[in-house]
Image 1 (tube, rainbow, N blue to C red):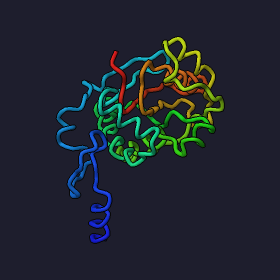
Image 2 (spheres, helix red, strand yellow):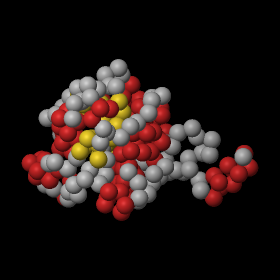
Image 3 (cartoon, rainbow, N blue to C red):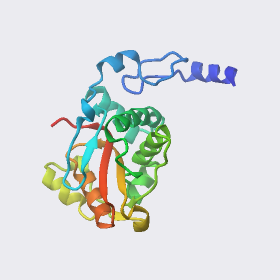
Image 4 (tube, rainbow, N blue to C red):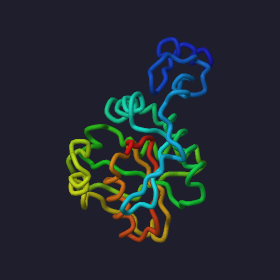
Length: 218
């Protein structure tokens, strides 16, 4: 295995998930030292309140190399980034939401979008973060309605209208009375998280908290 690993590193040298600099093959993290010093980390999880969710935290702000990294992850099949994102998420959740949730879940893609992309990035994040937290992530929502991409909507009002009624709880018995931690990749206005939280609360959830890899600055 050692020889194979060495050959793999020669052919596919590891890179920082944010700036794409080459890393030493022995590096334990996929983040270079310079990025660890300069990335736009939030303070206290960059706490954000929503209309139906109690609180959303994120370790990073959505700008610069963070933005470019997440776009590669979301649209260019960089699924390997999920492991490192999951570590950042787990640390942020431990620091800010420990003991405040019963279930870990995620914001799902529609069937059409999942077929086009080939993977659900939020599910990968939830599973990676849950693994770091010695927990498991479970499906609580589905998205039967195919809405326009939220990134193409302008105002917060248009984003809320675009996503209204798009989600449905998949197992009300599972979420009944539970405090749910909902994970997504990026949060901007919080419209998507609010709609998901509204759906979960209507299906019997006690409370919804959220976490994302990055959030937009106010």
